[in-house]
Length: 295
Ligand code: GDP
Image 1 (cartoon, rainbow, N blue to C red):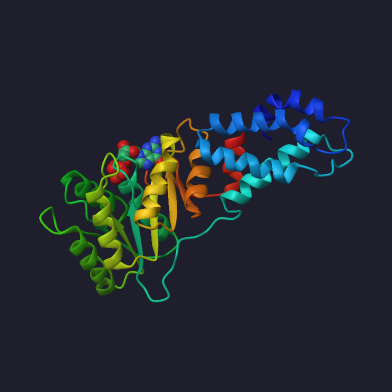
Image 2: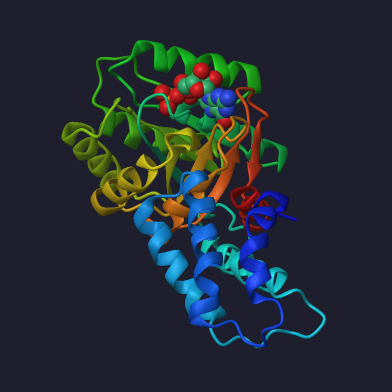
């Protein structure tokens, strides 16, 4: 497990060997390696600082278990802390006691929000749940067309009103339509921008206040690395998210954004996107992500 980090830590381990306690002085090298590993996995610098301080606290004074390489023991402390911070177990989507469950998708343009909307709908369909997808991105006709095409592909209906209607009204009527159709979940795709933009935030906040979603999911591109923390902070502060979907994990990122998103918002990553295909969605497992980040 974590061969790459373990190798890098070898020198640090040598210093720990033969000592019966992990102490402030003998742990510094090892902590430095953890810091390096997290930074190279694209975890946000502030998040790295806080995390490493926590690991240091946990590791200090921990009795070195006889027969266990203190290095391995240390890495176990790092791994366990990482899993703990990322949420320990997979947290499912919210489910309203009275249907329909309303899921609001938020995020910047190009992160994979529309694709994730369809991926979620397909995921729920496979669980024998019924969905309606709502297209509120009136600024980009292509986004509406994209959702319609995806809907046809996965056989999930799409509610849209073209580009002349008010996105808040589309969202509201979309939820009404879901009630009328008797579907149990309505997923609202929203407009993104290339950067954070107050009009976008204001519109999202109004949609949220109107449809009162059970889950507000921020879609984050895992390839954005360091930026993921700032982005999450702004969205969470201004909209209030209840979870995230981390997309493009099939790329070569080690996925440090997962730790940043979780630390900054305190909200769980619920799913990960692992490809362009509509089937390429998986529930988020903190253990897998911890291994990936540390590798
Ligand atoms: P939106 O602007 O946020 O709605 O983004 P889209 O859903 O249109 O996706 C933008 C691009 O990212 C498209 O080319 C998608 O095929 C691609 N994409 C979305 N999710 C993933 C993913 O998990 N992995 C990869 N490799 N590509 C993805």
